[in-house]
Length: 145
Image (cartoon, rainbow, N blue to C red):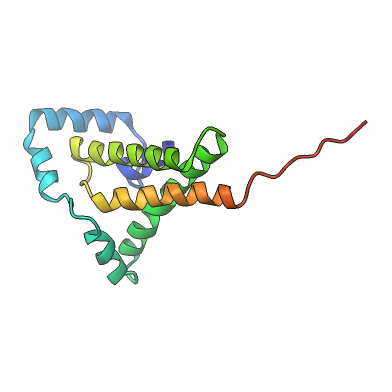
């Protein structure tokens, strides 16, 4: 969770709660900042994904496409290893976390909402879940005394 928050909200900078607080204060003083972020939002599925696929040779597009998937693979693994998670749980958990982070970016004017990020994040969570399903936990045999 820490890594998700760090990379999605703080990008590659240091995690600093004061930055979030200052951003929130700025948005409360100037609500138009949210409208500005929404103007750049993508609510049409597969627009960004197709653009990234067309420009995979560009590091930013490659990282956006595969990074959004990779970020959520551990979340799917966690759901599976928790022993209480199903495929549906992995789906819902990934979708809720991704949507919360995407909306937080808009509300704090620290990024823009992209429905394709939701799609890729959920895909990552499901891949993580599937990896654990295909490669189950090793059974540890105990020695008999």
